[in-house]
Length: 93
Image (cartoon, rainbow, N blue to C red):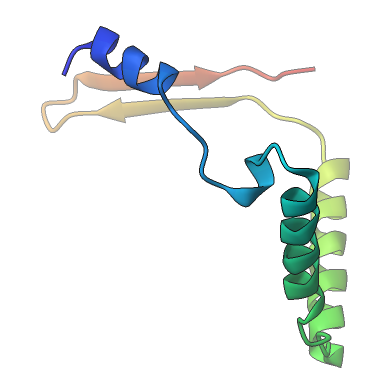
Protein backbone atom coordinates (compact mmCIF):
# COMPACT_ATOMS: atom_id res chain seq x y z
CA UNK A 1 0.00 0.00 0.00
CA UNK A 2 1.45 3.35 -0.99
CA UNK A 3 1.73 6.41 1.21
CA UNK A 4 -0.70 8.34 -1.00
CA UNK A 5 -3.37 5.68 -0.50
CA UNK A 6 -2.95 5.84 3.26
CA UNK A 7 -3.12 9.63 3.22
CA UNK A 8 -6.25 9.63 1.10
CA UNK A 9 -7.87 7.10 3.45
CA UNK A 10 -6.96 9.31 6.38
CA UNK A 11 -8.47 12.32 4.62
CA UNK A 12 -11.76 10.45 4.20
CA UNK A 13 -11.88 9.38 7.87
CA UNK A 14 -15.24 9.99 9.53
CA UNK A 15 -15.29 9.81 13.37
CA UNK A 16 -18.01 7.54 14.74
CA UNK A 17 -17.71 8.47 18.42
CA UNK A 18 -20.72 10.21 19.97
CA UNK A 19 -18.22 12.67 21.45
CA UNK A 20 -17.49 13.87 17.90
CA UNK A 21 -21.17 14.49 17.15
CA UNK A 22 -22.37 17.89 15.94
CA UNK A 23 -25.40 17.62 18.24
CA UNK A 24 -24.74 19.18 21.65
CA UNK A 25 -27.28 16.92 23.38
CA UNK A 26 -25.60 13.75 22.06
CA UNK A 27 -22.17 14.99 23.18
CA UNK A 28 -23.47 15.97 26.62
CA UNK A 29 -25.18 12.59 27.10
CA UNK A 30 -22.04 10.68 26.13
CA UNK A 31 -19.96 12.80 28.52
CA UNK A 32 -22.43 12.12 31.35
CA UNK A 33 -22.27 8.38 30.69
CA UNK A 34 -18.48 8.51 30.58
CA UNK A 35 -18.30 10.46 33.86
CA UNK A 36 -20.75 8.10 35.54
CA UNK A 37 -18.67 5.11 34.46
CA UNK A 38 -15.55 6.71 35.92
CA UNK A 39 -17.31 7.57 39.17
CA UNK A 40 -18.51 4.01 39.81
CA UNK A 41 -15.06 2.75 40.71
CA UNK A 42 -14.72 1.46 44.23
CA UNK A 43 -12.42 3.40 46.56
CA UNK A 44 -8.92 1.99 46.79
CA UNK A 45 -8.00 0.72 50.23
CA UNK A 46 -4.32 1.20 50.94
CA UNK A 47 -2.39 -0.90 53.41
CA UNK A 48 0.42 0.20 55.69
CA UNK A 49 2.85 -1.86 53.59
CA UNK A 50 1.88 0.21 50.50
CA UNK A 51 2.77 3.42 52.32
CA UNK A 52 6.07 1.96 53.53
CA UNK A 53 6.92 0.88 49.97
CA UNK A 54 6.34 4.42 48.72
CA UNK A 55 8.46 5.92 51.51
CA UNK A 56 11.31 3.48 50.84
CA UNK A 57 11.21 4.15 47.10
CA UNK A 58 11.28 7.91 47.63
CA UNK A 59 14.13 7.72 50.11
CA UNK A 60 16.16 5.49 47.77
CA UNK A 61 15.61 7.94 44.91
CA UNK A 62 16.62 10.84 47.15
CA UNK A 63 19.82 9.05 48.17
CA UNK A 64 20.71 8.45 44.53
CA UNK A 65 20.03 12.08 43.62
CA UNK A 66 22.48 13.46 46.18
CA UNK A 67 25.32 11.15 45.12
CA UNK A 68 27.96 12.77 42.91
CA UNK A 69 27.61 12.18 39.19
CA UNK A 70 30.16 9.92 37.56
CA UNK A 71 31.29 9.14 34.04
CA UNK A 72 31.25 5.57 32.78
CA UNK A 73 33.84 4.03 30.46
CA UNK A 74 33.17 0.44 29.29
CA UNK A 75 35.63 -1.68 27.32
CA UNK A 76 34.57 -5.06 25.88
CA UNK A 77 37.14 -7.46 24.46
CA UNK A 78 36.71 -10.48 22.22
CA UNK A 79 38.30 -13.87 23.03
CA UNK A 80 41.41 -12.95 21.04
CA UNK A 81 41.98 -9.91 23.26
CA UNK A 82 41.02 -7.27 20.70
CA UNK A 83 38.68 -4.49 21.62
CA UNK A 84 35.17 -5.42 20.50
CA UNK A 85 33.35 -2.39 21.84
CA UNK A 86 34.19 0.83 23.60
CA UNK A 87 31.43 2.90 25.08
CA UNK A 88 32.03 6.14 26.92
CA UNK A 89 29.27 8.08 28.64
CA UNK A 90 30.62 11.44 29.84
CA UNK A 91 29.38 13.19 32.91
CA UNK A 92 26.51 15.55 32.14
CA UNK A 93 26.19 18.74 34.15
